[in-house]
Image (cartoon, rainbow, N blue to C red; front, side, top):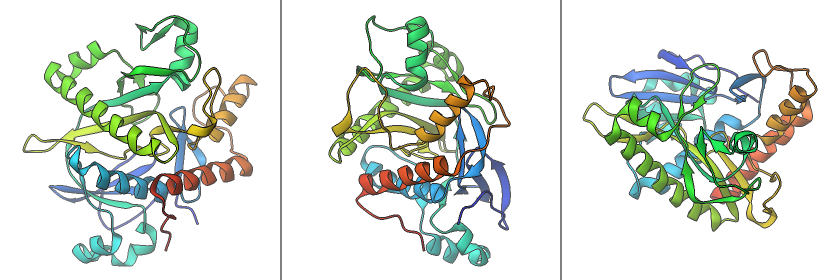
Length: 304
């Protein structure tokens, strides 16, 4: 079973590339992760089985680990406890099970805080073309998948639709103010370093990841949305890591690879509507989401 979209008796505040956001009250939201998938900032027509549940449950797992590192927005990810608090949802349990988070409400910073520990993906493409990342010069002689020491903080503007845009650290400070920009970078690096240590003990490299933050009415900065999931991160198995080439990954790389081939062949221009995903690409992507969840948490995905 896959879930392309939801419809529940709460006010829909927004529908993102993957999640629906519902208003619970003035202080809390319900985030429901569908099985939609986006790549190159375009939402595909096909759904990926189990994807929404993986995103939600691995985020909840990370939030539990991060309690001593950072304040975050998660209140509860147990649907039965959520329903007991909000009985209006009781007839929607099957739709919401495993893919729902009750969260504190914040004013979202309009920046994605990307931390890159390795040179890969769009960062590698820009480096090959210009020797830069978001316009900032990197050292000569780097190879694809080389480790970056220290990790690079590489912010981007958030786009509800269309393409996110990499920006310089200086531009981020202009948009948010120096104090908030410093606070977000410091928090993002701290969370990434913690995640790298946890993942490494499980034989996994977190090559890069992105975080989002929001501010509560009282002024607290919280980690929000998802955290270190296959949608927001690039995960590699440690035992196969070799710089100088692309790496096998636990994330949506099968989708990216297929779309990249379609673009190279001139069958897709990189904009919506996207090409249809073959069944084997859908199945391979679903398998990688499930494999990553089990490898990281040591648990099987809860699906009933």
